[in-house]
Image (tube, rainbow, N blue to C red):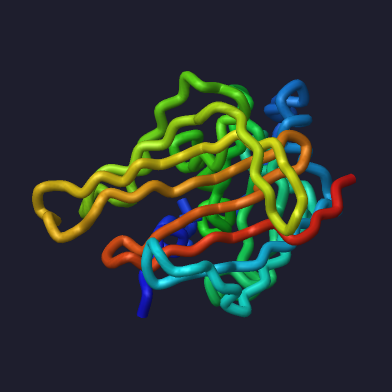
Length: 221
């Protein structure tokens, strides 16, 4: 069985008690346009993989459709409920997104949301928008090494003859001394302003298997 970063993340990509109060709900409308979160938005991705770093990527038959189906509030925070049709062989996978006060797109697993675990420390960063100052450690991999994310300069990606201007949020994986057989790798979350994730690049923890989720189509409200 192949083990990949995305699956381990639960996806950190990477696997409700709702409370009502008269306290104000945390809102960050000034940051929302970059991520453009609205009920009814939909994104479709195809997964391409390869066994090593030199082979050509091939479509592996996996198609995942993401939909924002509702707004949900827990502990005075507004989230968007996201469904996946097929995420790493998990059908009907659910997660919760919001834009926090820093303008970062963050998310909770459905397990944390259902338990009311909505503290900032329970939320993982998907993308920092345009904040180049963020250095974000993903601590899900401390058993194997370090995975440190930062934002890279805007660039252009071409997918199926369509050009997208994207802000790459790249994570450098560096093995620790206890795992000398592992090799350094880079994962990527390429977001386009006002559209969303265009391409996600990931790897297995061990070996050379790697894959990409590529945007096929989207519907933005």
